[in-house]
Length: 99
Picture (tube, helix red, strand yellow):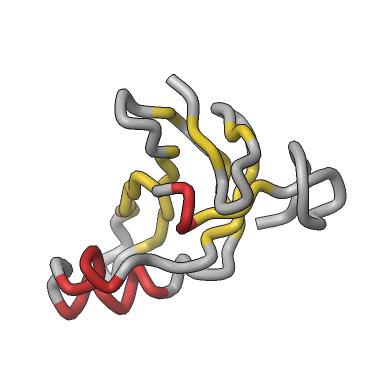
């Protein structure tokens, strides 16, 4: 499968993308605690772990919980929700950027 970013550029497994936002429809489906955590992903850089059968690029945000356990939120991103990064963390093409 293939995925594209908000500018129509190809996104592949292993690429780094910046999350530029989430749809209101998606955010309205979240519980209040999840809403806050998912919102923290906006503007951050993630490595694409998988491309699914409908062309969503999947990323995971890992964090330590209050009880010391590691937890994560996996999100499948639509093209309008991500921007691929180029070397040095600037916009365009494929990547190497700090998270």
